[in-house]
Image (cartoon, rainbow, N blue to C red; front, top):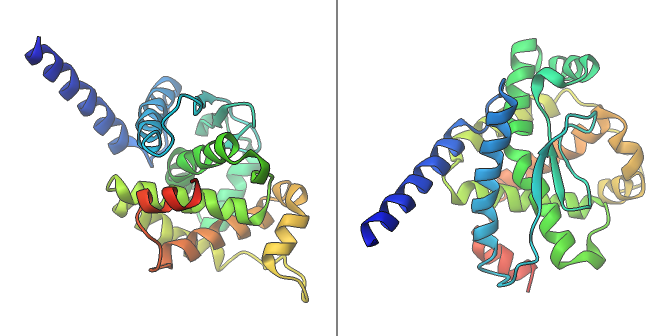
Length: 232
């Protein structure tokens, strides 16, 4: 029996590892996309259960390609997109900010079939354990981005994060600053959050700007320490 349990454990670990290796790329197969997303997020949930020893964090992932691309719906589901279903206008946006169709597609894989999966689970985690403070804001986007950054580092995705960082720097340099003079970016995006989500250039300015800032922040602790300090 012990040998059987060991074999099952090793097999499950191998499946999760393979899913992680394929992540941060563009998926053509919707079944593979959803299966791999679920394997990755089940591991994430097991990690965070170390800090909250209960059964409340039950968020699941569904395939649902919308103009928002990837998002937590506030009702316990993270919606993820498939590249072939993305609107032509949004594909044109990825081309414009990266410089080519090929780079736009690569960006989609790195971020929307990659980094932002755990970002959205960060929102879901806050909604579950800190609901009173979970309203849409610049600060809570920063929190979700930090959770994602530290978690991907924890499980060894430094190469992929570096690729995201280089591309984010390239895109951010092309994006116009939408923040008016006399107001901080934190205040502007919190006050105009819904409007910002309607304009991909404005929302990208916030998201990629935060990614760069967090990636470069050498003072951040490890994932476990951060989660313990933020969600006591």
